[in-house]
Length: 249
Image (cartoon, rainbow, N blue to C red; front, side, top):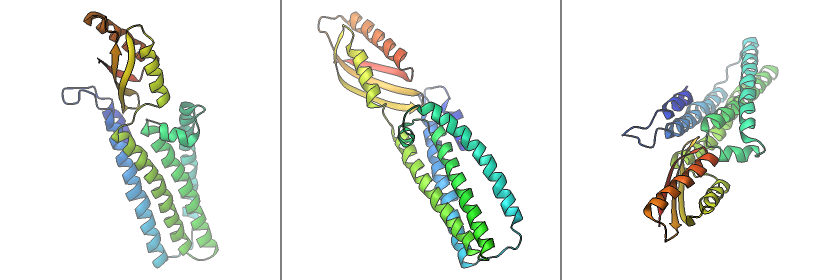
């Protein structure tokens, strides 16, 4: 729900208060989700496991535990396969973990990694319930709870790192920037791109600034026309580049 709220807020149109838009709302709320998964999901589960080990409570009838775990496992697998299909379509031939690191859309990898953690947690929970019932030792349930907490903490730390990086600001890949510079320098007006600055404001929105050296004989009007042509070519090749600022030097 928080991610959906962040997606909705990020699509709000720019205004006087936020002239570059609200795209980073998604990065902020994905960071909050990561922290909640760490604190509420991981830490509380780990603490609950400690309580169960210290004060074990045996239950004779475990049928409802198996029923709940089975239903949860089925629905989580369905959701996981849907997220995985979407993620695989987006990443193409890029390796899984590299795609996670390079992805600029936290709504995709946060849900995917969260569901992977859910599936792993359900398997661990089943083993804890089964071993505790089979060996007549309820402490296995507590051990399973602690293991689930560690899994969730590990995933949440990864998500916190990725979300923080996006919130602080990431640039497009070097390959993309090289292509942009090539396009800019391929025209007859611009001699060389001396500096470039870029940042993701949202998964589908990049702000780009280029400081370029123009031919000295060009007039102000010719420089302005050249900037418009180059900006148009960059936007056509890279639709994510929504705002382009080219400064003559």
